[in-house]
Length: 113
Image: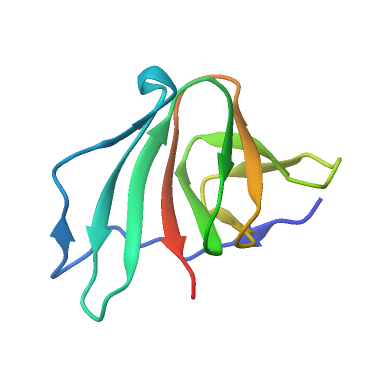
C-alpha cells in the first residue's frame, strides 16, 4: 500500500469562492470551488458514508484533510486507504471510486495541469 504525505494548508488567502455548492449523490458529497490567484482551481469538500464513483477530465490530486477513505482507481483492482495528511493522484480522462465507511471525509481537490 502506498501512502503519500501532504503538507496541508490551514487556509487559502486571496481566493475567490464560488457560492454555489457542487452537490453530488443526493447531498452525500458536497464541495465548493476556490479560484486562486494565477488561475489555479481547487475544491474543498466533504464526503459522507457510502461509495461513490467520479470521472476526471484533467489530472487531480485529492488531499485528505480529515477522516479517512478507501480508493480504487479505474482499471486497478487494488483498493488503498487514505487518512488525514495523505493524498492520491488521479490521471486525466480516468476515474476513481471513493468509499467512506463511517463519519466524514474532508478533502482538497487540486486540478493539476
